[in-house]
Figure 1 (cartoon, rainbow, N blue to C red):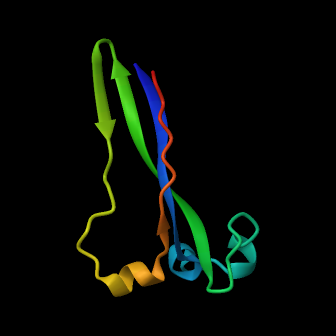
Figure 2 (figure 1 turned 45 degrees about the vertical axis):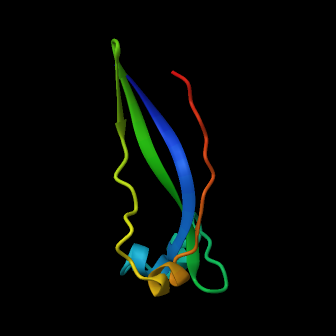
Length: 84
């Protein structure tokens, strides 16, 4: 069995919300925030190859959020294709 991570895009989320009680001085070492305190997050799905079977695992982001929500969390897409 082979597991292939696939980067399906990137988005930004509030760093304080993501790291909770961890001080900003610590999490910004690996996840620097922009002027709006947003950090870059990768959206990934996984392709599993098991013999002659391929299984794609993708939880998606959904579409139930309002325009206001997506105004706070900047989404952009970078598609990479991987051939097993």
